[in-house]
Image 1 (cartoon, rainbow, N blue to C red):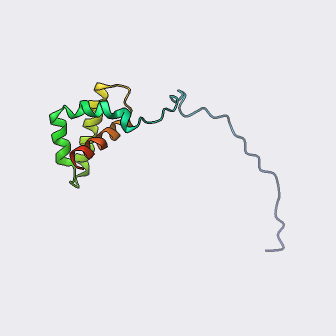
Image 2: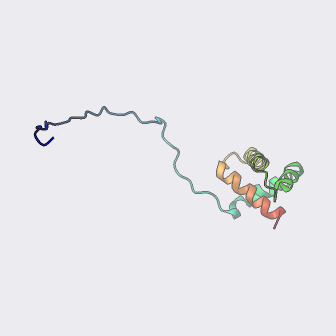
Image 3: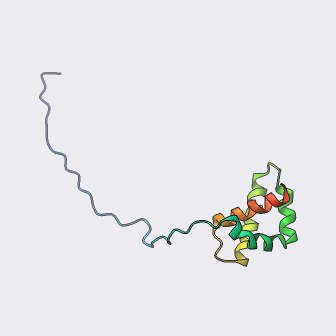
Length: 103
């Protein structure tokens, strides 16, 4: 095929301006609180015997579904006590409680 002449030209690709995916701006970044700062919330959650009982039952088991449910329960309860607790901080509270129950 060396006999055939290849055509050369310019390929122009036009790009239309894009709208941002999320038009609402994200909230400013706030670092997660330390365990010492979360200690008052941890102490308040330990007062709930039902939550502590469910958390103790899940610790050490390989049941991921019940583990997630227990962490969500701790997180939701902690957020009712202090609405400024973030999703990640709620999980950290569950971890701190687990360390108290099962050292």
